[in-house]
Amino acid sequence: MTETKKTLVSMRGIDKIFYGRHANRGVDFDLFAGEVHSILGENGAGKTTLMNCLAGIYLPDAGSIYIGGEPVFLPNPKAAIDNGIGMVHQHFMLVPVFTVWENIILGLSDIPLVINKEEIIARIREISDRYGLAVNPEAKVWQLSIGEQQRVEILKMLYRGTKVLILDEPTSVLTPQETREFFKTLKNMVAAGHGIVLISHKIEEIMEISDRLTVLRRGERVATRRAAGISKEEIAEMMVGHCLEGASLSEERREPGEVVFVCSRISLKDERGAAALKEVSLSVRGGEILGIAGVDGNGQDELCEVLAGLRSPDSGSVSIEGNDITHQRARGYIEKGISYIPADRKGVGLVANMSVVENIALKGYCRPPMERGRLFMDWAYITDFAAERVKDYDVQIPDLFAPVRVLSGGNLQKLMLSREITDTTKVIIAMQPTWGLDVGAAEFVHKRLLEAREAGAAVILISKDLQELTSLSDRIAVMYGGEISGVVEGPQKTDVEKIGLLMAGIRERA
Image 1 (cartoon, rainbow, N blue to C red):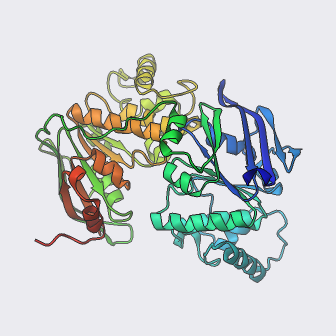
Image 2: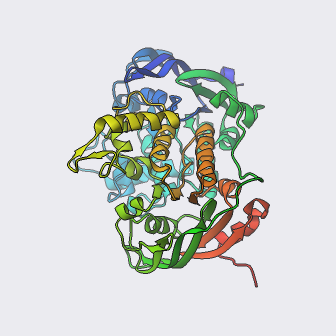
């Protein structure tokens, strides 16, 4: 029984405050040896903040941490690792040009002046074999798949002797096949007596792998329950505090209008000279959502960048309302009413060290009403405008002038939507708009995209989530090998197996 297991870590009354607001308030948490304990909650609920306190990244403002029943002080990640606690972050902390073994020993304080490479590699292989973490220690990190890079991060922690492993959204970048292999690794680690903390939004996966789960809401602990016997509806309701209705394509809706946005025979070579896009043609009507499906690496990223004006195609054309804009800069696309919601919120969509107000102003700062007299910006207007957008999109922020890096993923996405979706928006290009979001934030994003469609915007939705695409899209174009392998009309009534075949490059026979 779980109750008889050894307690590895206890956290009591943890408070963490940013800009006068509680990210965590009086949170208690326990982790047993030989269990997977998952932490769930909406974006901004305080999950990662709580674990950052345990990993030595943040110092809690109140509360205590105990390891093996003894109080400990964890002022930095080294102190946490020295106490057997390691964290694998959502965005990996690896040096791409270094080998696997070089990354694993990087930062160790007890490395001798003369490194015994063979001994290090032998130890890495022994750990790899024990836990099922197959990876070549002599390979360069940039040569590895995302799944292999994640194994390197885990190996890094195990090499340092960690007994507690914290994993932040570990499956968000994995394929279903990689996720299955990853879960096998977790089971091997649990069987060896390790304690695993899993932070995730994927309720189905949480229920599959977890022994216990803790739900946080607005920085406070709502409940800690055994995973066995609880339904995903119960979990979702505990996370958001109410029942979720879900957003989907309505049976009664306005008919799509005229064709607004067209790309014709777009071809593009990637950085290595290989064909990334091969004569791709698409059209989208006002009041329509066109979904784009495909396995990663089949040209979706490149197509998105061309459609948003970030890259010029080698051949072909892009037009809006009959006007050719193919070789205009991104500013020209913006001025034509094209909005872009990139998958990378922090790296591309927003500037992490800029304030909420400044990020809202990024699109319109160079023209009235934000611009005043060509050389100046009307900051009073911009601040009022930002406050209005934040309120309309329910963006939870500590302050209008706080840097956006302190916001959760869901609030970052809401902030970006508030800037990109306006009354003048004609085309929305949304790339993985719910990646890494909890069920509540994902529902919010879906509703806003549907509202934009009903307002007459043409929406292009690129997603790896087939359920998301089939529930929201009027049509789905499937990409394979840089081409459109097929277009599915009425996807809600289409067998997903058909879409799956198109994703594998198998076209229907005429």
